[in-house]
Length: 241
Image (cartoon, rainbow, N blue to C red; front, side, top):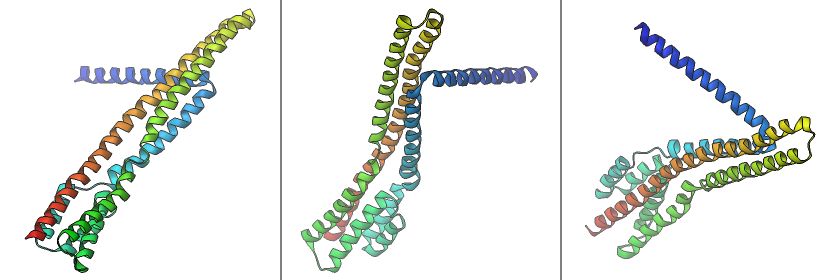
C-alpha cells in the first residue's frame, strides 16, 4: 500500500516538474518570439471563441434524438393527425431538423386546407421541405471555414517569424559587435524556431477542433436528408391510402 502511494506521489511530482519546465520554456519561447507571437495568440483566442460558439450551436442547441422524433411524427402522420405532428415539430423548432419539419408540415397542411390534391399537394409538400432546408442547412456549417483559414494563417505567420529571426541572426553575425554577436545570434535563432513551433501549436489543435465540429455538422445534415425523405415518403403513402 505504501509502495503504491509513493509511486503515485513520485509520478505526480514528475508530472508537476515536467509541466513547470514546459510552462517556463513556453514563456521563454513566447518572449523571444517577438511581435509574431502576439498575432498568433490573437488567432488562438479567435479559435477558442469560434469553437465555443460552434460547439454550443452543433451540440447543445441541436440536441435531439432524431430517431425518436421521426417515429413520433410517423405515428401522427399515419393516423392523419397533421396538426399534432406540427405541434411536435414546434417544440423542437430551435433545432435545424425541427425547424425544417415544422415548415415542411405547415406547407403541407396549408396545401390540404386550400384543397390541393394529388401531384399538386405532393409538390407543395416537397417545396416546403426544400425551401426550409435551403434556409436552415447552410447555417449548420456556417463559420467552419474560418478554422481552416486560421490554421493556415497561423502556420504562415510562424514561418514569417522564422524568416525574420534568421535575418536577424545573419545580421548579427555580419554587423553586430563581437561582444553582442553570440547573444543576438541566439535570440534570432530562438525567434526563428519559436514562431514556427507556436504557429504549429495553434494550427494543429485548430484542425482537430474543425474536424470534430465538421463531423457533427455532417451528421446533422445527413439526419435531415434521411428523415426528410422518410417523412415525405410516409406522407405520400398516406395520401395514396
